[in-house]
Structure formats: C-alpha cells, structure tokens
Image 1: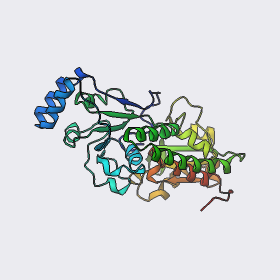
Image 2: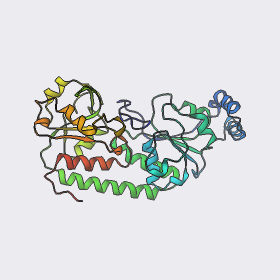
Image 3: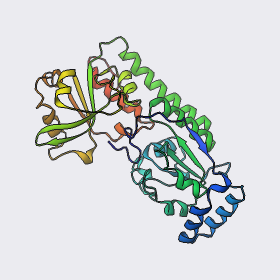
Image 4: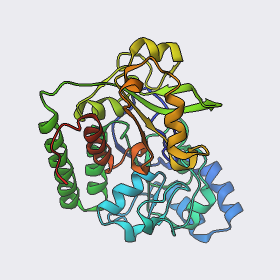
Amino acid sequence: MDTGGHSVKRSSRDRAPARSRRVSAGAVLLGAVIAAIFVGSAWLRERIARTAAGRAAAPAECRRIVSMAPSVTEILFQLGLGDRVVGVSRFCDYPPDARGLPRVGGLFDPNLEAIVMLRPDLVILPTPEAGTVEGFDKLGLACLELDHRGPDGIFDSISAVGRACGVEEDAAALAGRMRERLRRVTQKTSGLARPRVLLAVDHSAGGTQIEDVYVAGSSRYFNPILDWAGGKNVFGDVDEAFPVVSREAILKVNPEVIVDLVSTDRLPRGGAGAVRDGWREIEQIDAVTADRIYIVTADYATVPGPRFILLVEHLARLLHPEVEWDP
C-alpha cells in the first residue's frame, strides 16, 4: 500500500521524532560541486560556496517550499501555505490546487536536479529510510523531517510545520478542530461492544479468490484509528506492522468485520463488487455470514495526514451502524 512516496507500511521500526536538519560546512563539497556543473546554475554554485564557508541556513521565513509526500502537501495546504509550495512529489494530487505544481520525483527517488532548479529554502519530507536525505544534505538544502507514522505524530508534524513556517496559531487551530472531531467519535463509541476487525491494506487476487493479504498488525497508524472507531484489530497482537496472512490464519481469527482499503487505481475489473466477491469465497467467517465486508476506496484512507480523521469517522460509522451519527 503506497501512500504516494511515503507508505505507512514502509517500515515498522521506530525512528526519531520530527526534527530540523541543517547541513554541516564540509558535507556538501563533492556531490554539490558535481551537481553545480551538471545543472549549470549560478545560484547553486553560490549556495555551495556559502555552505562551504559555513553560512548556509534556512531563511527565517520559508517562502519557497518543496513537499516530498502527499501527507506533507496536505498539511501545508491545510495551514494556508499553498502559495509557498513550489514543488511536490509525483504522488501529490490533493488538494486539487497541488496537481498543477512542478513534480520532483518521489521520497525514495527524488529528482535532485528538479528540486535545485526550484530554488527552495525548505524541503519537507516524512522521516525516510536511512540515506534518503543524503542528497539534500550534499546540496546544502535545509530540510524538515516529520515522523507521522502514527496519528500522534501527525499532530506533532502539524505543530512542527507551523513553527518552521511562522503559522503556529493556524497549526494549533487545525489540531484543535481535529481533536474535537476525534473526541466526538470516541465519545459515541465508548462503552460499545467492539467488533473484531480485519483491516486489509493490500492483496493480490487469483481468479475470484483473495490471496497474499497484507493486514494491519501492530501498526502504529491503523491500530489507534481502529481503537478510536470502536473496533478490535484481530491481528493487533502480531509483531509485524503489516504481516501477510493466509486464508487459514483468517479463518482462525474469524473476523466479524472486514475492511479492505483499495485505491481506485488498484480496483480490478468489476470494481469494489469484485473485491467483495473475492472475500465471500471464505464462507466460514462471521464477516461473510453477516455480510459485513466493506471496501474503502477513498484516497485519504492511506495518507497519514490531517484527513486521517475522515478515516476514523468513516470506520466508526461502518463498525457501529447502531449509533445515531451526526450528518
């Protein structure tokens, strides 16, 4: 399941919290000089000279921002910073205003030449695998890394972007609105019986049968979301964040509800109905018997950004139809 440059199942390892990265004076020479020759940019050569002299730093006001993931782009636009965004990853298509911005590759394969030509004073990216940020370091680009692999980290990331870009009040207001919506959901689901939920995040299909199912296990992202929505993750005690489970394992845990997150571009011929029919091949489980198989194709379902609250609200409605939900 790719969230567009930064998948919520890339790694189950813990990493450091959000932090600003500044390049050291000696870190830029070889890679940056080569890049300067290749790009032929006087601005880049000047930046390299300033960095080598130990004077490179992000400006006090970030006016030209490059976003390396959909989650980051959503935070920026939610905070009213869309007019400062000069480049985005190839996967950023929300909000619609982001679609026309220059593309700079993906988190794991950034187009450094394209990024340099945009002359950013800040590059913002989710905490990547080790080594991904080295190219930015060599070019002397100021970076802000955000660790939002869990919902708490999303709130921290909103605050971090607010501080870096001078919109702390807007960040606090956005976080406050999100927390209030979350409070309303958990208030309604508190004390209710929690259905056993299998949350599928990816799978292949052989004929009409679902195979090789990736499910939410000990995921820092989906576990709290399911909990807030009033469900119990049937694979929540598995060590892996996103294990592959067999048909036999699914029969053993016998979920009462199946939620399958499938992006629209991964739907097979026949659409969501075909995916649902594949699950119905596992006839012995309670979710099939009760016809509680839900296919969620909304784009926000796999992007760990501010819209995660929409997934919490949507799942709560699916898991607890007995509740009188607000319109």
